[in-house]
Length: 133
Image (tube, rainbow, N blue to C red; front, side, top):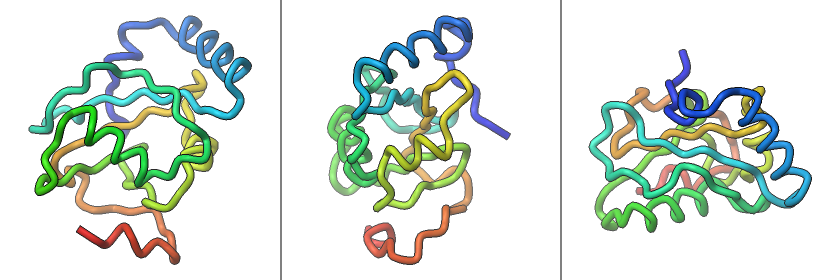
């Protein structure tokens, strides 16, 4: 069960695949990420969908970037999902990319103001920051 991404519907596979290959060739220290709001989320909409994320950025740092772009206040929660799973906060975006990238070469991420998928998490024994609220 994967989320439906407008980006996939708006751009044919060949165009997406060639664009991600071009990006990876030109910026080998970054990963191409598509970020869209979860369907039934009340979170604000992002101004853009396509991001070129430093490979050494953690998921937690990436969440911070998204929070700032949607101007979410500190008391509001935000969750990001990759294949309907919350990735570990301490995981590097490059590791998440390698594990979950789409066949077109992009990593697809959804975000929501609530934990819409019931809290299923990828396991990460050392990830203590993810339990902080």
